[in-house]
Amino acid sequence: MNKPQIWLLAARPKTLPAALMPVLTATALAAKAGAFQPLAAFCCLMFALLAQIAANFANDYFDGKDGIDTTERLGPARAVASGWTAPKTMLFATFATLALACLFGLVLIAYGGWNMIWVGMACALFACLYSAGPYPLSRYGLGDVFVLIFFGFVPVLFTYYVQANHFSREAWLTGGMMGLLSINILISNNYRDVDTDRKANKYTTIVLFGKGFGKWFYFSTGVGVCLLSLLCFGGLGHPALGLIPSLFLIPHLFTWREMLRIDHGRELNKILGQSSRNFLLFGLLFGTALLLV
Image 1: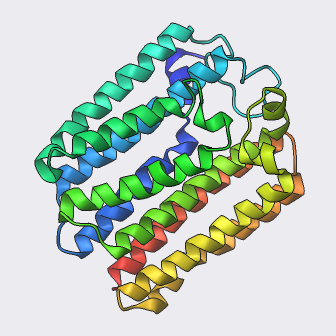
Image 2: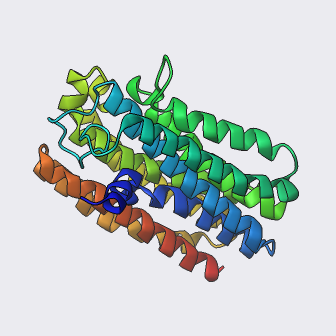
């Protein structure tokens, strides 16, 4: 592959809805409250996108360097493990991307105050700690918690805050929805990689509790998203509109049944793509329902 293809693969585009949709849904909530701030929303979007790409680069570097990613890997090839990129180049790209994300984050101080520095520092730190350090979160069953917080509550709440200057019940509920949908993407990866992760002593929740747990975990996150949607629109005074985003449950169940049918092997790679597609669909349905409030 040429260099642009290598770096596109390393950025993992199928995972990027987990960065984009929390910011977009939070901005839709802010707009509904009459608080839309276009520059703040754009900077949140760029920060979230670049921070996730940096986290993906860091994961590529550390899992390649530590032998987590091997030739037995069933998922998409990784740049460092495949020898396409030197480890030091990937490490430099990680910190360069984080630095660029922080430049966008600095603009948000004008909207959310100096406390936004602490939010940005926490995001940057945990983007690395997910795969690095003496206790990498992704290798000790904490990846799901990290994703719920930093791909759900943090981006939604603070994207809403820098525009509306307060938190809201609907923002908290939307943060939970985005977090659960992001966990779906993580589950699709960990379910596929359970055997190679076990060999590499990477203790994801699927390794710790088994594939049976993983199947029902994936199913229940989708149901949880729909319940939170009903609560969110109920709080807005239009509970019936919560059924519109809940239509996401139909493709979610089809994806879940497909995961059960395949069960193992490289064919499970399609589940990641379908999970990302379902995430995008939910965001569109959520936005449509907000327009009708």
